Every structure is written in C-alpha cells, then in structure tokens.
Length: 213
Image 1 (cartoon, helix red, strand yellow):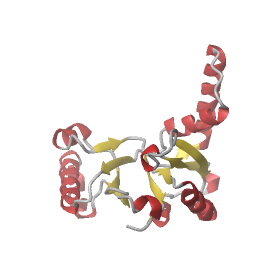
Image 2 (cartoon, rainbow, N blue to C red):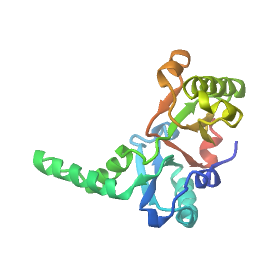
Image 3 (cartoon, rainbow, N blue to C red):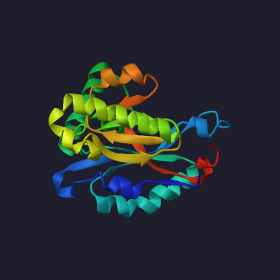
Image 4 (cartoon, rainbow, N blue to C red):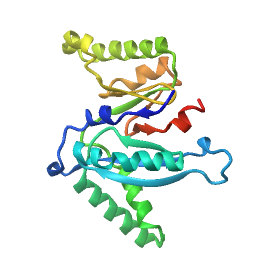
C-alpha cells in the first residue's frame, strides 16, 4: 500500500460553504503505535476548522507535509458542526475550569470542545477493521437488512444503500459513513465492529506508515 489520500472523498461530505458557519474538525495525530521507539509518541500536531471544500484544498499541501514530516495521520470529523455551538461549548468549559480552579491550556479546551461537539447532521462511522472484502460486504448487507426493517418505505432505495453516505478507505479496512440505524440489532451479530456516533475518519496516511502494515 502506498498512501491513503481521501481528500476528494471527504470533499464529497462537505455540502456547505463558509457563509453557513459550519466546520469539520481536522487533526494531525502522531500515534504511539506508529512510533514504538518514542517514549511519548502520542501527540496532536495541528488542527483546523475546515470551513469549505476550497478551504480544504488550500491547506492540503500543509497537511500532507506535516503528516510526512512527523510520520503522523490526518483525521477529520465526518459531519459538519456549528461554529456558534462550538463557541458556546468552549465558553462553558472555560467557565467550569475557572469555577473548579483547573488550570488547563486553552488549546486543549478548544480541541476537546471540537471533538465533543455533535454534528448538525447525525453521521456515524462504522469501523470495518478488516481487509477481507467478503466480510465487509456481509456487514454492509446486514446494515441494509436492518435499515429496510426499520425504514420500509425505503425498500426501493435498497440498491442505493439509503443508509450509506460514503465509503472511506482506512489503513486496515474501510469506514462506512452512515445514517443512524438500529445499533442494538447490529451489535448482536458484529460485536467486534465499532460504530462511532461522533467519530473521525481517515483523511491522509503517509506511505511510511502504510508500508508497515
């Protein structure tokens, strides 16, 4: 495997403009499992509030450079989030810290709020952590079945996978970006498949990390 470059796929999830006051949270993360020789490898290198497709294009070169330089991965939220609600959440966190006497770097407060904030549209990340395409298809068909059972009026859309918003390649498989479905029923059959209700998905992974797999 060379690199994972999902910039074009991610732009397909960005159906908003800067004037909409929405963003998708992009982070470059150096992960410990990619650097077992470093004593404290887990590190947030940089983050952005991506406001539009054009904005993502404008920072692509820097994102790629930093990922290659630090041997790090770029992740991005799969659902747009509200700038106004982010401001409110940051102020609440800062006020809580002042009230309790906690002295926390505002940078950490900002990034914590970005990650905690829910999207304006519910988009889940179904983390299919396998390169077995047969198993990936079985999981997709199971979600199809669950969706049809709970959305009978969408039967005619089954072939279009009405629940499926996008498929994002990852280092070990694929992320299905989905609309909410009956998670309890799904988990009964696929206990090891994690579904993140407010998760990140892969934007860019450099070749130096991909080659280790």
